[in-house]
Length: 267
Figure (tube, rainbow, N blue to C red):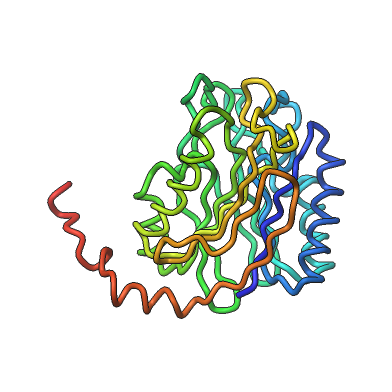
């Protein structure tokens, strides 16, 4: 399966960001990608008041993504914000395209490193997988990567890959943590891990913008054996990669971490 990771930088204007989604999806489709994954907060960057921008899944921004998907014949996964109770929003991944129409609300909220996502965002409670060309793919968002259970749940549901969309917070050691966590989650679940981050708005400085998590770049594709197969730098760039879904079964035969679990001991 050929996928594309769109490591771009979004701003506060959903309309401008939708035009970026259109441009990058077309580039990915021209490269033969079947699935195009955009970062968390593709609709509007963090540091923007989110509640006034949030739209339902049948609103104009999501409909714009569906139009782009239909025009290119690709499955598009993109981060947006949908309304939630008590004036908050859900941090939502929309997945739409041929045979696919679903969404995932981020389960683990980023109340860490001095940022409190839960002040404005309501947590999701349901895992989501999609099926593309006979392959099952799990969906995850940013801080989720610190929680192995979600990725094992994808594997238990039959997923051969997880698509991880992020807007990773900058700071000392954060790039190293990002790569370590993505590789670890691939190993935990013996799945392909395709992780796309927002590009560094500081053009490679790693400084980010203010206290909000606005991305550091360094998107990567990790194999089910935990090895990095493709990686980007900090600047905006499109990564196109072929995932060998048959490799997952081969790795699981050699490394039986899923079969060897003892979950009954931890209940």
